[in-house]
Amino acid sequence: MSAKLRGLLAIGLISASLLAFAEARVQIVHAAPFTDSIEGSSVTVTANGDAVLEDFLFGDFTEYLTLPSGDYDLAVIPTGASEPAIEASVTLESGVDYTVLATGDGVNQDLALWPLVDDATDPGEGNLNIRVVHAAPFAAELADTEVSIRTAGGDVVNDLVGVPYFAESGFFPVPAGEYDLKVASNDGQTNFIDPLPANLPAGINLTVIAIGDGVNQPLGILALPVGQLETRAPVDNSINGWWASGLGGNEGFIFQPIPAQNRLVGTAYTWDLNGSGDPLWLTFDSCSSDVGAEACETPGAFDGREAVAALYAYSGGTVAGSEPADGDTIGLVSFEFIDCNTAIAVVELDDGTSVSWDLERVTQTVPCTLD
Image 1 (cartoon, rainbow, N blue to C red):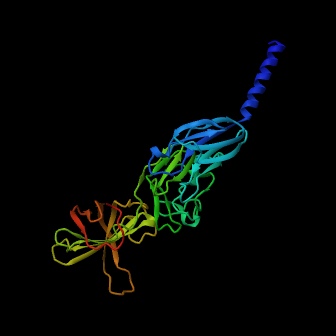
Image 2: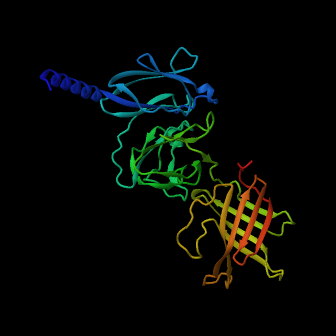
Image 3: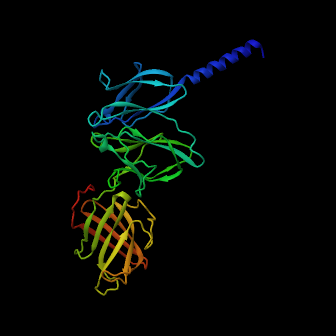
């Protein structure tokens, strides 16, 4: 190889290295629910006056865009408008990855651009990195936007309690596997966002963003690089109360949901199956644990509409007795709540007996969201 060719190759390699070092990567997210229609959320994003994105809609996000490092004046301009709705100056450092979110609804929280540094490290064998970002402006006071991140069974994830709007957790490692998570109030008693369970593979860097304001756009979860996650109606107290059989009201169920644990417990009242005519009271629990068990075997077993619960019978007790009664699981009962006033219950006993009830609501002391 000639000295001249070697020199040209060396110059080329140095130039390529300098070019690579002088670049940053940026992904852009539209998380600003400033209008009640998706079409109306269309914006153009410019960098130093040049259009980077056009017809960019709420919930959209880009792959990483490679840009020269340096200072940028960014603007977000509603489609059809002449003036920006959001403007900000940012500095992109060489070799750094960024996620930039357009946030706020212009009512509860101001419109803004929010740059995050994507600084995830190797999560370790069998793990993935996850980052939680609160970009859901559903209240005007920051204290009123605080949430906790929990499993469907109510356990707090990574000490994430009291997380306000415009806060993020940073990346932290978790074991790969199926996760059923939810966004809840600080005490866990009220559920705000309840995505369906998802299988999270090892080795990825996942950013989970709470979006929407509950007025212009529904609350939801945007997961990068996956997209918007399918959600279910959060478990609340809608079905709380007394429901009776449509056959005359002498059989039925008393329901007590536990939203913090996505759990349904209660009592069934009916007649002894031996035909004696004696009343029979049973209890049920969607955790489906053995009698006396300290742990809930199936946390998150109630989704607000359906549940399968263990059915328990007790005997040998005395009024205000000092010894506990004997209890056994005798089968399963499945529930389907059609709306705020009708439901179906199907009992499958261990001895093969099957009974089905059409239920009608007797009492309703709390608001219902099932219709």
